[in-house]
Length: 179
Image (cartoon, rainbow, N blue to C red; front, side, top):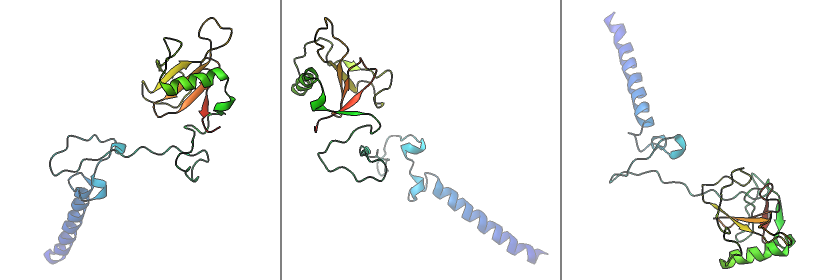
């Protein structure tokens, strides 16, 4: 009986060795294997880099999707691409002249007619794409006949996007500067 068990023991030991090797490669100890490097997407947190180690580098931001959606040809460089294709857009030239004046002041960096112009817009209702706090800033658009700031605003994002609201943030349209 001893002769029969020897081949089974050898096979069992080989299977255990293969399983141990696979387990080693799937952990962070086998850094040569692609699954061994933890990425932020997997929920792992990167510790401080040590000499000779390769810390996971954050990926570059994804390009803004073109209005055509998935599979669409990317827009040529220098063309306007909406930040949210589902959001309505409006041509800059179709805005009231006061909004165009406000956009001109924003481009120059002021001076602004109202002390609250340029303050952080918090996007509490999440009507604009979600971004980190302090990303958006609001500016008053003069409303003829109003004795206060009125309801018209331009909101800008840190990446240069601009939004128009004629109804004090109830709705927004992204401003297309090409037209």
